[in-house]
Image (cartoon, rainbow, N blue to C red; front, side, top):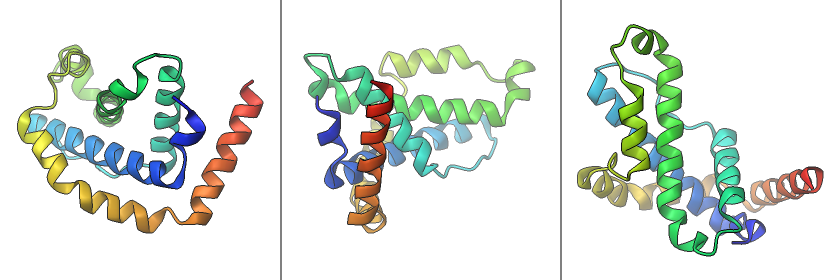
Length: 155
């Protein structure tokens, strides 16, 4: 898996669209399950950073391309759960929110049910269009240049 290729304009749009829909659907599940409302907006830089770290973790794996989609879903879900927990730490401390079962469900591919997956599929085109408008050639070049600098510094 070539990280540079994964940060082409097309892949930036594709990855951000998927990450955002997975994140938001995960967040909505947490909100529904707990009856606690939090902001479901995705931070652009955090999303890119999370995607980059995931790609770095997978790049040497022989089946990286095959498992990437599921791993992206898991990563976005984990990030959503982490944000939700950070925003509602008192629920965790008071024992009103069990974190471990949620994490286990994500890791075991049991967190996203059929309805959630269908919701993602139905909304993916809108997500793609949104990110296509946002990620201009200039933005994609800037992301790519930042990635090259990050790779240069970390090697």
